Amino acid sequence: MIVLYAVIAACNLYLGKLLTAKQYEFIHANDHNNALGSYLGVIMTDEKNSKDIRLYGLSGLFLGKYRQKMEGFNIYLQMGKLNGKFIGSIEGINQFAAGVAYLLVGMKALNGMIDIGNVILYAGVISQTVNCITEFGSQVISFQFSAEYLSVFDEFIQSPAMDYDGTLPIEKRDDGQYEFEFHDVSFAYPDCGTQVLSHVSLKFNIGEKMALVGKNGAGKTTLVKLLCRLYEPTEGTITLNGIDIWKYNYAEYTRAFSVVFQDFAMFSLPVGENIAASSKVDEERAWEVLDQVELSGRVRAMKDGLKTQLYNNNGAGVDISGGEAQRLAIARALYKDAPFVILDEPTAALDPIAEAQIYENFNEMVKNKTAIYISHRMSSCKFCDRIVVLDAGGIAEIGTHDTLLAGNGIYAELYRTQAQYYA
Image 1 (tube, rainbow, N blue to C red):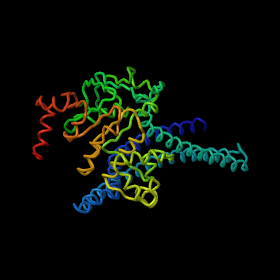
Image 2: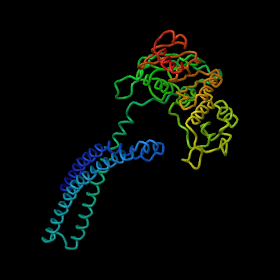
Image 3: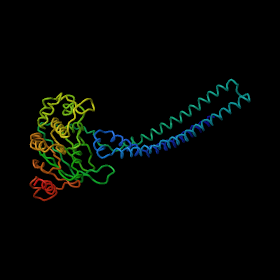
Image 4: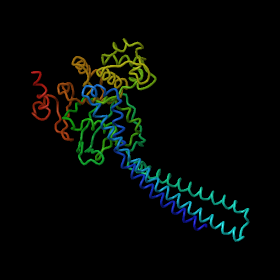
């Protein structure tokens, strides 16, 4: 009987392993349906998409695709049938073992080898043994499936990761003397053969106002994300004052930057907390930066001033326009008062007058800090000390506004294409 039950346990393990592999195969085959179903559910219920959905009549299209994906979920019915077959087989084997045991006990009792009273004892032991083997098999299947499912996460965790474990502190300087430099830097997204940046060498001179320009996809924003350690270079190194930036403590390193990305985020928090990025708000400083971005009047007119809640996700709040949100994002960057300022399309949502005010006051805003300005509007680059033109992931031109116009290269082409409509 011991040998028989050992064989039964081995059969349970084997069938459990087969079932686990089949279950994972079904789940993995349904990854795309799950992802697309979730995506459609989100876009159909996000208020930001309502205008396009209504004006272009997209509800029928999205609902049709959602229903189509829901039909794809019959994969779970198939998986249920498969589970039934395997679990049924395992239970059948266990009951066969129980039957053999009961038969053996009955024969021993009839032959007088055991007392009739002990039949009940043996029957209870057999029943408990079979239940334990069944539960053991069930738990093994569950653990095997979990282990198989988690193997994807384990593989991800074990993969080479961006190293945020640098220990060097950033040198505390009041003079803003932080010199960053790219040394033959290239970058490509994982599993993508095309390089977004290719062998870029570039020094950001201390106190310099630099403009990064180029066509869409030239690599401007990617370059900034590499500098901020949001991405890791595929090749080459980036240094701060001659030291590889990956040797610096990550939290300290990020304090060197005030950044406004083109896809910045404002949160459903009070205006002051959005600007300070903290529950502790220096109100005098907050009003100062709001004055700089010409938004203090709008905030003072709000019911609770700096304590006015934005949006309605976290209680009743105030909705602001895209241009006002962009000014708040610039105010947040100025409030941080970091030595290196990065503005990625900072005026895209502003009206022409507000945009002109930002340009005119830009040098006063950033004062003696090092600054990078990314824009598709060539006229906004005139106030910069140096203009770097990126093309196809590499540096195509470097110079001032006047020298690049005289060079009749990419910058001149972009500038004149825009300028002709104002001539």
